Length: 594
Ligand code: FHN
Image (cartoon, rainbow, N blue to C red; front, top):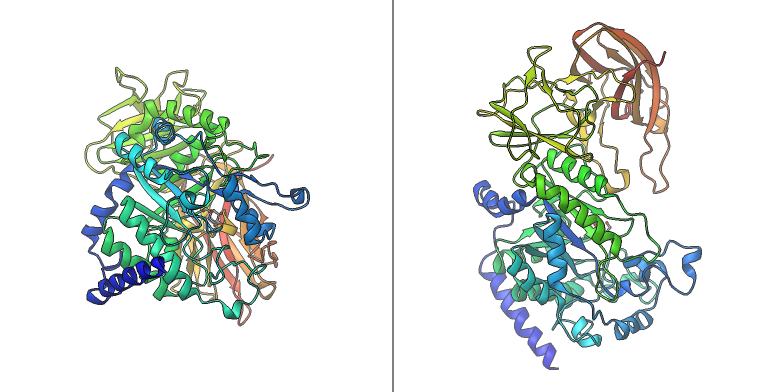
């Protein structure tokens, strides 16, 4: 009874708050206000994601079912259809006595991370903090008797990192009224489920508790499937009322968030606004006993740099054990990443979108007055070609060189710069060359064909010039991680084009990557590579296992191109009435196979 009264009061206060003024959502605040709120996050670039909960106990194994099912970590309750009464018993065993918030934060800081987002409540419904809204929490239901979120907040405040929380505000397999991908084994009658009740009695009160108790810098919502806008707005209004500076991700639902969250992939660029790639360090979010498929530090560093070069943030995940420790491999990799960041973090923090076109040896990150060339593939001849950099840098040095000895340059073409590098790279993973540039860099970002074995020259959907109002850029989705595309190609007058340059005469193999429906079968198109037309006919490419568009790669032919400036263009020849030509992902030129 006591709790209900407490909640009635809180609900009244909340309703009064909502009645008085509906807070400006992220969309309603001025651009300047939003930039001020996002500034630290855009500067930070690199954060730690932590998936930690009762699921760390089974760690992907349950009564031998894992032998023929993919029971994974934080999804085990759903995948194994574990009844609530059985899953709840895990709480009595959960006692992470080795949990050391200061150590976690120190590890993240040493890796170069500036913020931490930890699961306050995942889809299993268990709160990792002492919640008044539900007794199903770490203080009331486990022998642990401590508040790990409070300890993390204290450690973050002491070490200068910012703390945010993941919260699953729609899916909750512990509750009868939560919708989305819900618990149908304990609560089979979906018609009876009242998601407003779930939001009113658990999700919203818990988010308000998190805001009031810990003043988070980020709320990272997840899987807002079936969440009506009114519910998403209840969360945004509470956040704007209680913690206006809090940053909210797009998974609050209904386009009310601050940034996109491409999951387990790096988009071809910021389709619009801010984005943060969230990525596992092995193959699982939560702790998975048998998963030793760890990404090497080199891959993590390349992903971090790739994301920043496209103007985004990188949220790298660790799944701690039920004892409260990071797996030793995770510690090792974070330490190796930290070694690289020790020397090169200047090229990450506050850096962002590269002004240059595609670079085949690595990436570029930029900040006012600086370009940072991240050389993953050190040129054997010591000549680093920087296509399209017309500005002459005031100074060029290896970021690893404390004396900043200047490097010399030459220009094979007026718009291309060659930097003379020492024979040995200072770092085999990513050696950074710093350029001091006066004012905004003058750049020709036109793609310069690279005539080198193994190099793919990609003309992608992301930067295609769309000649046709109906053509639509379709950003990648989680299930189609690699494939953004241009779709809605209904008119024979619509075409795509990309300018490009060839430094010398050469022969090229030409391929196209697209998805097409059975209705598109037989539609004809032409790919003009400079003066050469290559004809093609669309074939149906089928569906993926999850019923999504299947993209396939097709050879179109080969062309000889002289040096100089060219245009690549894809144009329909015939589109059957009522069909679309295709969803085009990319055209690819590779040095012709002899
Ligand atoms: O189902 C969850 C999953 O467990 C994990 O939390 C990821 C993190 O982005 N989000 C959902 C899958 O999209």
